[in-house]
Length: 458
Image 1 (cartoon, one colour):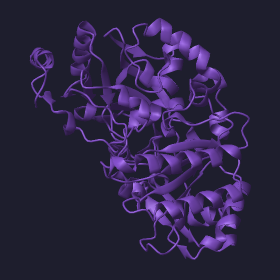
Image 2 (image 1 turned 120 degrees about the vertical axis):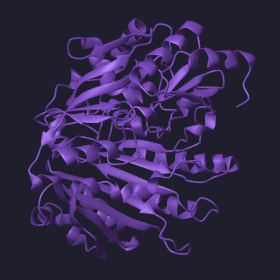
Image 3 (image 1 turned 180 degrees about the vertical axis):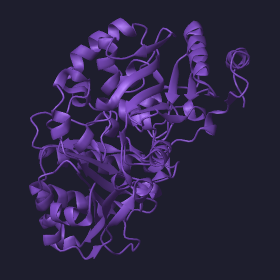
Image 4 (image 1 turned 60 degrees about the vertical axis):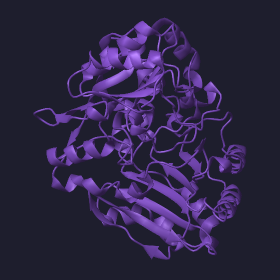
């Protein structure tokens, strides 16, 4: 690792203060899911304890060094590119312990824990935890942006299930954030990366009998000619608490064939109940049905193929209040064209929908997550390719698709779940009605603007 004289001094000084199992490594040793506008640190601190995080932040504050914490390495917002070679990336992968309370009603997870870690521990404890639906993402990283997922219809958003947070603040202090610290408690739950690094957290968990750890789920496959009836059915479906769905357009593997249309459905109950709940989709007539009763440890397995790190994967996300069939046809056609481009064959479209009633039962001002009632669908267009020379083409497709979605979103203003956003959105688009309150808290908590790489509020 070739460093400037000053960075080498920083490495030597910091290394002497860290725990024995911590290490300092080269910038490319903590791979990210996408290299498109990725952070470019001078070096990486691979922490081994929560105190290592505190020590690293304190050193950065004392030396006026920029820094950024990485959980699963899946964040794709272009704002993260603000971390340059004079900065430090704090890799939390070494702190990923997960434990449950004696009655399994609470879970304590460290900042580096992945969704797969939480699910595996939950299955062992016979308890469910509200997480994202991708095994390889950081569990707390997803939660701090809001935390949508398959169980939110029953238990609310991830932020609604937090009990307390152990946080390293911008001034380099360790503190517990809870309802007893109301301003930070509000801000951290929806805009957390602007206010501190969460080294561990306590969340609610839900003990289950053996049947409660099963769900009926899986993909239904539709033809291109069924696209409009399917989109109409999705728009008509009334989401019940135990339901979730995911729509994907992806390459079929045959370059001359249109993209696959895959609707993955989820029901936390029996097959009979699930088939009844999703009857609208069966009426459209899927050409293949691969649903099955599935154990908790395998609920997210369908997305594992998308966990491969590396390459360039800009994501153009939007929030929608309705599903417009002509718009989705235009987007399907855009993807059909994109995957014909050499090197972009693995590009895709993804849309998730979850029940909102439980999330709406919490007061709108209970957390900084702003979209409890109006985002029924969260959609993302993802060009996937390897070469930076393809960036302009990918961006052209992405911005065009995003504008199509926005033009028929059914929303008075653009609104995007922050964990899905590209990076150039207005702050109002990702923080909604909470923007001014968050800016005020930011001024008080982080006047030096140290946490400023994730849709920065200052």
